[in-house]
Image 1 (cartoon, rainbow, N blue to C red):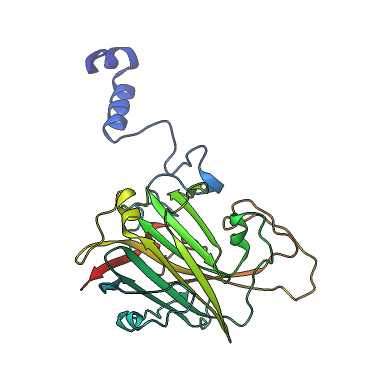
Image 2: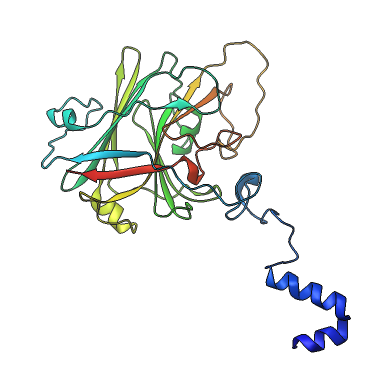
Length: 290
């Protein structure tokens, strides 16, 4: 139906209002209205909390040196000579808590076949389950986390979480908070080692795994979106009655026994009101350099 006929049918004022709405992209949905079916009540599409465009990732960059034939043996202790070539990142902080953060060190290297990573964590109260019902129980533990994104909006990104015992929870995700826990990172290996006051995690991912997922070939001069995080949990020894409450971090699961006290450290400040790593603003860059 053409515009002149709309005017005859609806009346001049109503019709022109309709046309203006169409031009502006109006629809029957309200501004900022949540999309039905979004996971765990997260906001939809590219709207940030409170409206507006979704913030982009940070320009913070970790530069992973390419060390040919790195000869790294995974045992949870990053003590091979090649690790001395790696930059040490210590800029992990509480983004939602005004308190000094316990020390966290991250390092990464690359060679012809793999990306290697290690976290060294100061932790005086490690939360670790003796037995996991499945790998998703890792959400109740102390752990380190790495996310790799193929785009600025986190339409498709990949998450690796490793606990203090080297157990892996890996999953694929899409913003906002849509998770596929059945996905596994092909070729990922991780080990851990206990420290006098914490733990260390060491791992590697085949470069061909990134290529198979649609990332550019990881060689010197290439960078990809990457997030580095730490779940810093502690035991609740207050003696208060246990209250099991669902939250966005446990994916609807309930722990066996008292839930831990949750705190969160991030390399990049996501600048969200509530703790949430699963937002584009939490990501920096991982760049491969000579």
